[in-house]
Length: 75
Image (cartoon, rainbow, N blue to C red; front, top):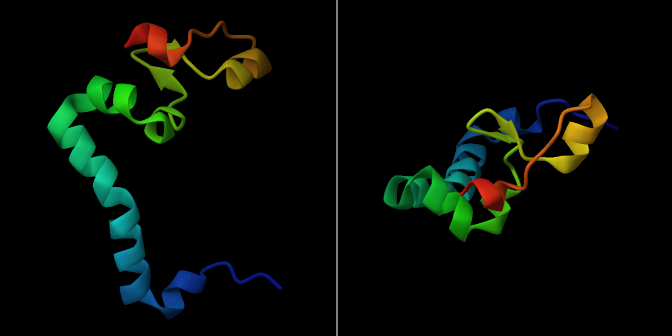
């Protein structure tokens, strides 16, 4: 059983959940800037595939034959 858009049944709740999930990241980006937020938050850094034109995800780089650099080396 798969419902493609379950959140449409509870839009107000879904909006609140998405806001609560995203707001800490938005606040960190606003306060620390991109590099600072990525440096301080491993979860946020783990969501980055490229940074300033450089591949930072080793698995994705390997898949496409693109050299990668660890994100922390670029921060």
